Amino acid sequence: MIKTIGFLILFLHILQRIFFNLYLWQLKEYRQDRYLEEFGRRKRIISPFSSLILNKWSFPKFTKKMILLLGLTLGLLGIMIVIFFDNLLEFILIFEILLPLFVALCVLIMQIPTVILKKYIFWRAELKRKSFKDLKVIGITGSFGKSSTKEFLFDILSLKFKVFKTEGNVNTEIGNAGAMLRGLKKEHQIFICELAAYKKGEIKSACKFVKPQIGILTGINQ
Image (cartoon, rainbow, N blue to C red):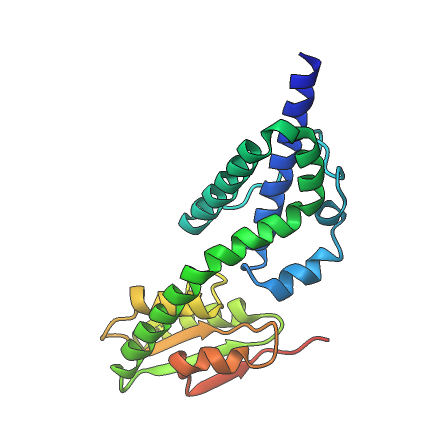
C-alpha cells in the first residue's frame, strides 16, 4: 500500500513537471532559443524534485497543437513505463532527471509537421497579399507600445477608410499570416499589423508576405 502511494506521488510529481515544461514551451512559442534562455533562470525546470506536489501547477493553454503534443508526450511516457515496468523505480528516478530533454524531444517531433504547415500558411498569405494591389500596409514594431499605437491608428484611420488590424497582441509571423487569411477582405483599404522579433532577421522574414509600405518604430530598449 505504501509503495503504491509512493509511486502515485512520484507519478503526479512527474506529471506536474511535464505540464510545467509544456506550459513554458508554449509560453516561449515553441522556440528553442527562448526556451533555453529561460532554462537558466527557472530552477523548477532543471532541478529534480524541485517542484513538489504542494506547489502550484502550471497548465498550458489547450490549443489543438498542445492537445496533440500532450497526447504524444503522455503516450511515449506510457510506452516507456510499460517497457521498464520491472524496474519502475529506477526508471522514474532517471526520467525525473532527463524529463526536460524528453519533453524537448516531443516538442521537436511535433515541430516537423508544424514547420510544414507554417510554410504552407505563409505561402497562402503571400499569395493573398499580392492580390491586394492597392492595399496600404502599416507595420508597427519596437520594444514597447506596438499594440497601443495600432489601436490609436485604427480608431483614427477608421473615420475615413476601411481598415483591418490584427487583434490583441498578435505580432508573430504565423499570427499575422493567419489574420490576413481569415479577416483581410477586398473592401479593406488599410491593413495595420504588429511585427515582433527576438533575433536579427525576423522582421525581414515577416515583411516578405506582409509587405508594409509604411513602417512605424515605437522605440528600442536595451
